[in-house]
Length: 126
Image (cartoon, rainbow, N blue to C red; front, top):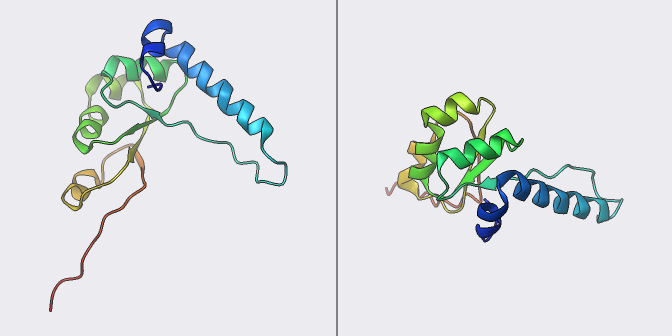
């Protein structure tokens, strides 16, 4: 869930999350004061990570997770272990969403939003 997963594997999910959050807060502290004081949201990309790692990150306070594969998002969002251990989890779909996958995501519980949605819908031909 941290770029270059070796840090996560070597030092643990909790340590990695704290390190990333500290860097985010340091960046927030350096931003110009004339910008709106909007708190950034860390979306932990759980791509290729097992459910146990998502649950561990949730246990360390991470609530928002992102996936860029529809099938993996659907599997994790309906995983019984994740559902029972992570009641406040929110999912983001990140990346390009193909038209044939839109309906698969519609109405899925805990899907907070789709980031960088770039679906091209063509009008019906006359």
